[in-house]
Length: 76
Image (tube, rainbow, N blue to C red; front, side, top):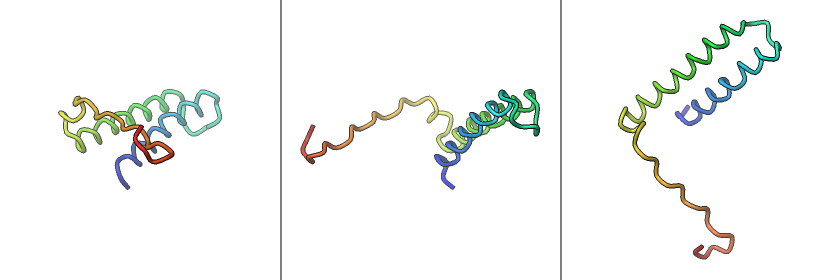
């Protein structure tokens, strides 16, 4: 499993867990437990970034996103 897939999975859990607790759709954990789980998941994401990119990589400016190629294949 690559780190991007893991980040997407964690983002989904960070969104889903509080939503389930907010609407009282799950009897598995309380709102306080939900907050703790989301906090640990967020901390996990930071740790993954620190290991993968290093502390300097987390504050480095991101490279620009290249525009998609034009439909006719020519320059834009």
